[in-house]
Amino acid sequence: MKLQKKFCLATLLVFACIILYRQPQLIINFEQMMGKLDIDYPSPDTTPGIMFVDSTNEMAPSALTICSIESAAHANPEKPIYYFLVGFNGNLSDYPDQTTTFQILLAMRNVVLLPLNLKTLFANTPFDGWYQQVIPDLEQYWVHVLSDACRLALLWKYGGIYLDTDIISLKPLPFTNFICAQQENLANGAALGFSQHHNFTQNCMIDYVNNYQGEIWGHQGPLLMSRVLRRWCKTDDLDEFVGAKCNGISYLPSTFFYPIPYGEWEKYFEYWTLEDIRATFAETYGVHIWNFLSSEHQDDINDWRGALLEYFFHKYCPRTFKAFYRKR
Image (cartoon, rainbow, N blue to C red; front, side):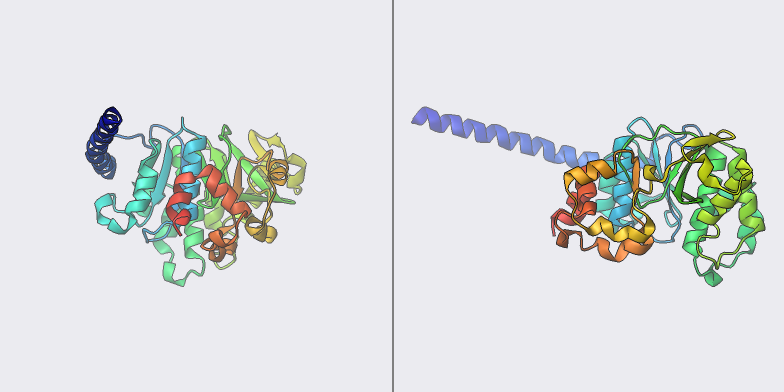
């Protein structure tokens, strides 16, 4: 009996020592993460990767945004994941309200947070004159048209892959020079991949400025991609190139990134069986959640037990799911 007590005490002592040892280590690791931007990390100038953009002036990324970045980082561990934020000044310590967000993002070795200076980004591009003249306060869809411009300028200047912050990655992205069909005869720019200084992205920037109509929803986004791609492929029917290449650009089927059409976005909040999930998303590399339509429902994910979106969060961005939903 005495031997058993001694063994228990010894076990507790060892456990206590481990806790005391690991606690300062955890604190040190987080302090190192908070100072991560001061270290020499990969940049788009030298290492093309996967890029996300927050075109708002705020520093309050949603759970879906963090999930999108986390899932891309896990699915593509060999690629740097760049998260550009217009409202970020480069100093993490200035945003104490976002400690949880930084913990999730910087715990992944291939995620890099970067401030996005718009004047610098648009310099020496067709956007330069447009940006100096446009009046954001008069633009109905400013955040969206600005995002459309940022992705094109980033791809042209650096090359790589761009993903919207409401695309949850399911598989690695090995593609180069690609666009994905959204629906019949319509392309979408939520998932794009191009080499540096590609003529197609330059053509898109020129069309963006010459035919700018920011008051029309999608005119600078999917409609822009579609009209430039038609000229590039010399066709009025984009569907004839779905699943094929057109002058060096792969036109991917909608199942790759838009398996659920925008008009059926509510399906993400419905119950799905595993069999249905596997059958529907077998060829899918990233699911577009259509945040513009679904954002008001995302906070209620815990009320939708077994919902498809809950499944994607739990499986592909577990850190985000635990931080934002499991505690509720």
